[in-house]
Length: 288
Image 1 (cartoon, rainbow, N blue to C red):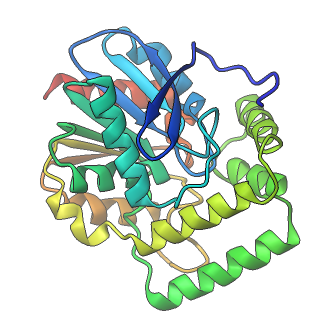
Image 2: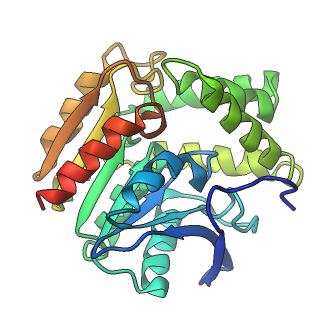
């Protein structure tokens, strides 16, 4: 199904309730487990640069969410609530203990949703450029849906993917092109219309299943990282504000959160500035 797509580490599989077959990487050992959740239309190897360093201190598990990467392509009702249930079921099935959830972009909103639904499943949280901090009004949503619909009509899935990944980096490099190449190869393995339906459902869910008004309920020690030059958060079409402002407002609501802004960095913070992110994570976890 996936041709010559190569993951950086051995891929394992496990079956979960709801007709979910999950692909995951599992590297390193330690008293703490980092469970990595990728963002929209991504896959677990986006955490490669973090796992290769952090596995020396922690067990590092990165999953492909259903419908993504090497995980199943079954007909699911994709939503933040659905993904949160998958994450919880995975933790239970694998018997993971002393878990720190780490989510990027949509994966960040999924991590927050998971802790809101299952507050005892993890005792720490790392958010890299998380979705869910930005507030969208009803009018914002209408405009956003219309814009996405028109953009999708005028371009292909592959073009949309390329544009999104390129906009996720502050400074382009061969690494971004490598990600585009592999993610594009994955798109070509999807059956007709499945990929677009999944993306549309995920975007709608991120907007409709807001966590912004519930951030005060996230009691776990949390590290929130943003690139200072994030071109995706905030949505520049709708909001005349800054990434720093969005980050500050979100972190302020969380009782035990600390913020780390990283200079000269875009939305793909854990990849573009992996060294700084890894150092920040190690320092954060050391103090727990």
